Image (tube, rainbow, N blue to C red; front, side, top):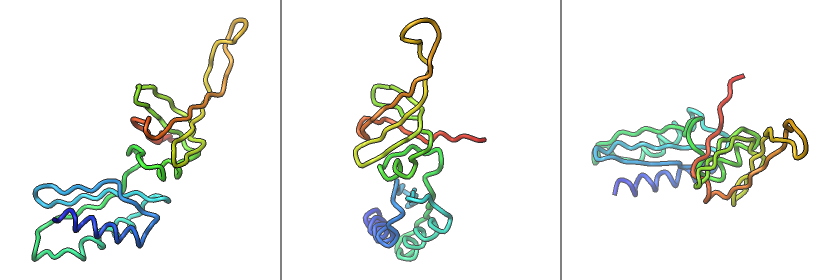
Length: 155
């Protein structure tokens, strides 16, 4: 029952703030509620406070003892929703498919079906000795992605 109530409160909050969305919500046996959110423009502390208040202020502590934690998905969290991929076009991604193929490249496009990443690779010349740099591209459907993460680089 608590899970349904919290889900309804979250649905209302996300209806008010459609730029934010739920990544995960868990409630353990001690009524510790953990909510992970993301947003089309990222997530600020104010966004977490907004979601926290939307839930906490509508639950009666006299009826049920609970704790609530609202957090952002974090930079190292895997991408799972198409809107997360769309937000990260232009960034470097590490993508692993269900057959364990792994590539790192620039996310050049993302739509409702899948993504396209591009990268450069050194390959043997078709004729003669030596290597040549070639552009590679991989189009992959979301259903075929086992894991995708933004590659964090420090310049």
